[in-house]
Image (tube, rainbow, N blue to C red):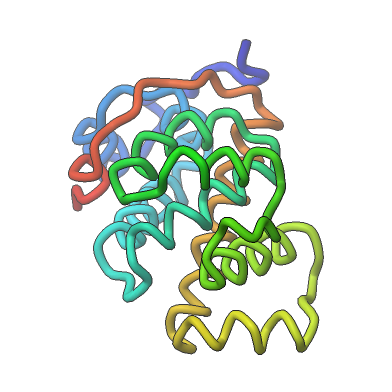
Length: 180
């Protein structure tokens, strides 16, 4: 059961209320709308992470699943397993993330570097120079910053879901996130 009640939509500014009507009814969106001034940009940032990154969709989903695992967010996991599957993340890789076996030799060097880097980012304020060099062997500087942005976004999203006990909801297709 959620720890906060749904906010009253009548209290939202007109532009926020109108924006929210373009989205599917969803407990997470309702929870986020407690902050009427940030809900629209927060949802728009999610959309940008599906439409404006150089980072490939598969890599984005690896980052999100790793954040979900290390933040213990069943909400984010449930939402992104189907998206990860669609982006090409196979069951074995998803299971290794869930088991926190990020150094498994069955993972490609790219996946190992990306997963280890993401887990470190979630758990600590800094990563070692060695790990940074390793991940930069596989990612451009732009992609590295995008990984940090995706990890930070989903860390925040995960914390809203875990701290406020937001119910796991229907998984939506990517086009829903692309609304302006």
